[in-house]
Image (cartoon, rainbow, N blue to C red; front, side):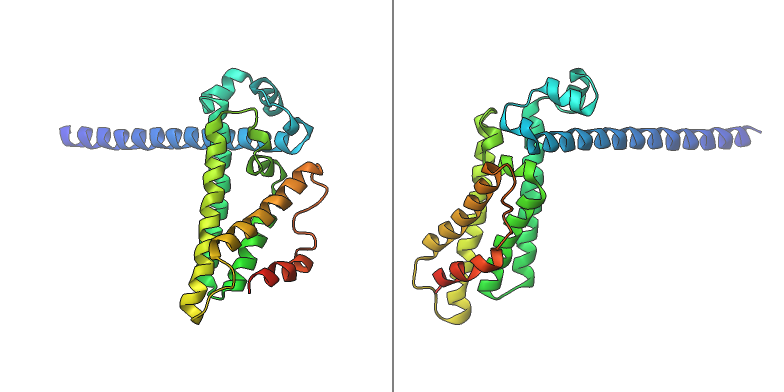
Length: 221
């Protein structure tokens, strides 16, 4: 009888542990979903006319449909919200650039795909483009702009490395210095992104990219 009772309580404890585990998992999922909703709302506000001015937590809370206190239960500060959006930008671009480098070996194809990736990502995410150009960060802490600066420096470094590898692969490099070419390529992208923001997202970055590509390619001699 004692053995049966012990088995009974073991089963009960196991069931209880499973229930508690499911509850914890559901709570975590709900919290993650709410965090995603907050970030999506912030990105949409950056895409709208609100994005040209400082976005307050009061405005964001109204957009999400919660109190400011509820926002702070998910993010300790507005800076952390921007941090999360920047992390998404970094992960999206860097991971796909790495995939391009893994899949393609031709230098010009690599360059074209990387530029198209940056422009295409911007076009699909207008609100995030305000962050990439720094316009949305003018009202925020300098550290956030520093993260964006580091991201573009990293991309420029990858472009420079791609250009340098041509000499290793083909036995000859470019007429111009690889560092100069890499900065020129990145400047093209940054210019297109700035134009996108300045035009209130009317001039899409990928429009006429194929027509512009021969002009870019002419520099890669």
